[in-house]
Length: 323
Ligand code: BT5
Image (cartoon, rainbow, N blue to C red):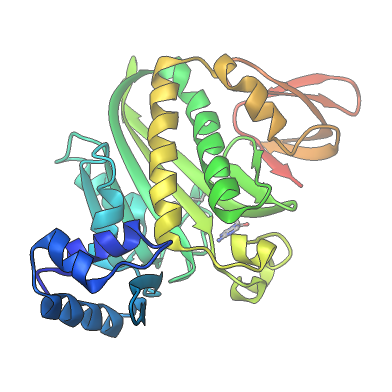
């Protein structure tokens, strides 16, 4: 690997809207123009697309299909909130890897994998995690959080993810209580919040996030083709996975600090505004209890309030909702 790869990649990525001359790159990094040229050739051989135009210079126009380690370091180091980042080609589940690493690491960190062979959702349901198409990531947050507050974590997080999908994907993403993001009534993202701690407080939040970015509908297994979507399937436009990840990490960091310092009431109106549950009759299942009715509110502790068809009021902690 060229010793200049990271620094040239950083310049090209940060200036991707414009051309950078070989001369300017060479001067900024105090290296020769030949070294710049050789490194650009190497980047191309690794799947980066670099346009070179005489008298203008170089522009980064495309990224490798698989996660590139140097590019990932660059993107994930934009903020130093996540102190360590682990990027794999294939793991069983980023949740499993994160839980092993958590025993030795006390600061926030992330685990990302191109492929998960046993990606999972809540209650050990399968999570389809196809390579090169999505973002499969676990965040570990080591912190003391009082137990009563944890139910609202998903709600703060939902807004951060939906905001990222709207900004980077340019599509109307809705939050579906308690842990999904939908586009056009199809699931585009699911996340899973697990905790470790003791009777009085939580010590770790282990949050696995799966986001479908560049899937075509046919990429999903048949049983998901009517209910799943990706940003690309919804908009016809591919998403740059690095740009998406960069934005997502910054939104997650903001949401996490907000979760620690504020109550759900601070974001309740925004959450309700972006929610896709109101004014429709849906089926709600929690444990063995299934009802049909309409959501009417979310309480300050994160519980969902639903009025069933017979007029009875129900409160849910984490129901499955069929859209
Ligand atoms: C979730 O569970 O939605 C949480 C998914 C969390 C996945 C991430 S990926 C990184 C980390 N590592 C892991 O192993 N997991 C986390 P739940 O609410 O139980 O929904 C699961 C259901 O979503 C499945 O039963 C399918 O119906 C559907 N599903 C599975 N894969 C999907 C996909 N790629 N897109 C949309 N829906 C999917």
